[in-house]
Amino acid sequence: MESMRETGLKGLFPSDDGNAEQREHLLGLIGQIVSGVDELKDPESVFLKGTKERGASFYRDLVQSSLIPAQGRPMSEVSGELLKLLHAHPYHTKYFLTNILPMASIPGILGMIAAFMVNGNNLWDVYGPAGAEAEVRVVSMMSKLVGYDADASGGYTTWGGQGAIFTGLRLAIQSFVPEASKNGVPGNLYAFCSEAAHYSLYKSMEATGLGSGNLVKVKTRADSSMDTADLREKMEMVLQNGGVPIYVVATTGTTDAMGIDSLDEVYGTVLSLAEKSGLPRARIHADSALGGFFAFFNDYDFVRNPLSFSAEVSASLQAIRSRMKYLHLADSLCFDFQKLGQTPYSTSLFLVKQAADLKLLDLEPDETPYVGHRGYGQYHTSYTLECSRMGSSISIYSALLAFGTEGYQRLLGQFVEVNEAFRRVLAKEIPEAVIVNPDNPGIITLFRIYEGGRNDFAKELGGRLSRETIDRTNRLNEMLFEILGRDRAEMFFGDTKKHLYVPASDGGRLALYASKLFVISPFTRAGDVESIVSYLKERVQETYAAYRRMTSGGLVNEEVYL
Image (cartoon, rainbow, N blue to C red):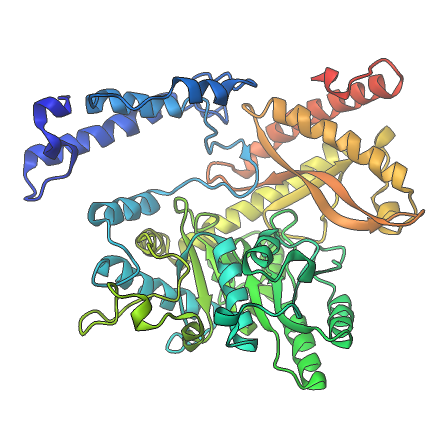
């Protein structure tokens, strides 16, 4: 490969005339990356090959050694440096079992490449017509999927579920206080979410100026869904104290336990309180970033069962559908395609039931003097927080076309099948690892170990254990976190320090710590579960042994066991 000096600056860009020489140059460089990644793959490991000693001084050393080269380096060398970045990077083999970090599918990658080739700004269709067209298409597709009227709904791609929750909150503020965008946000506006909700709303409350003190956390049930009786009680309390409930985030697929709030109950609660108080109904946002993809089963015929799901998998999918079918009741919702949509980061879609609502956030023509509001161009998204938007809708569009409804159904069904198999084998082989989200079908299993192999989960739920006992069990599970994390190159499990808040017998409420199996790789099959559980069993036994040594006084430092 030639250096920039030899080819000139034009050699660093795709051609303007489609000539074969420059095309082959670009494809060769892409091929170098793809081939290089393939050489680093090991299907029996979760990490790509290569070593990275990420010690305490790793990032400080990078700061000291990094300089812009005086002369550009040949692209073949640049590609080599890029591949070095990927050494020891997590990769989605069958043993990748952590959180919501999916593999980017080929159609998702190709969609991104198509977007990058024209590099349009999706803020305005004059600058980014391809992205605008794809965005209108995917908004319509997903609106129809959840039961919105596609002729009335709207939306756009944004920077993740956080961006969707934030826009939903901005809409709620403007709906109740139209002058807020100019005069500031009053301090008597309140938002609500469950204790199991993602922290995105917490950050959004800070960013809008409402403050996290105006965010009310609602208790959850044993299945991690919002307790709507507690929601009603806390909304009434806010009203009695002169506050105004404006926003409720219902989580339709929590990231820790796959808890799904009952949107029909949430909607009914919010509506009845509005009628009682005489105030407008608080806006409801469904945080469906993860679980919303199960809406692909809303019209699946489980009686005929054309994809031949087992009875066990069918039962789980139907239980999920029983709640996902109410997504259309939300005023807004989101789909993180970089999660179960299998597209690259960041490809999130925000949907609003009434596109006209977005006008509440729109800017005046004189505030966008060089973008939009012309006699040409029909698509100007000045209501988005971003002033520059990538055409990530093209990647979403590509994935929807390639997978289709059936493709997503097959993939999600496979994930559920693996999760169900894991629960069966885990209960048989490691009975001391108690499944603490048994009422949550789907793709996530949380398990928790107890001292002496006991099963104290029911006692924790019933408030029959002291704070000290619960905290001691949490520390035991934290040791398991560290042991699994130490060996994550072999199998990469997840964990959480926030599964269910339970009452302690001596007062207060504590969150339970639990390890997590999150089925997210298309390469994980039910046949792999035996080896997964066998691996896990060894680490659980190691944890118990280390804990016994520590509590017997043999260790002073809890980290010595590592």
